[in-house]
Length: 111
Image (cartoon, rainbow, N blue to C red):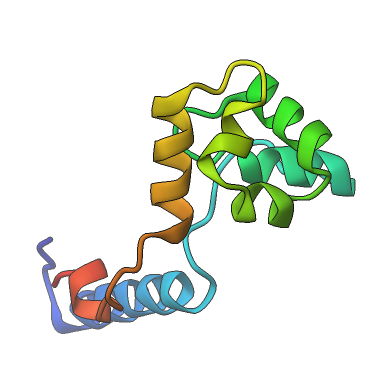
């Protein structure tokens, strides 16, 4: 980004800093639909898992009762849900159980 004068440069720096701080403090914002009731919020959360759309999320929630139940389910238990095969069950387990190293703010928001 370019600026014509020092005042404009300072405004750009402040703006960029606020953006980084807001993202670092609260995580990434998912734009669009924001459910209000608990069940819809749980379905929304489950839709963030790999290979899980709305219908699969509803089936998972119906089978396990809670998001926590889905996350703690084994591959075999996940496969018992209609529409969840070995591949999707493996991807879900990978997403919720694979340990990762912490990221630094510089890795998330390179300058």
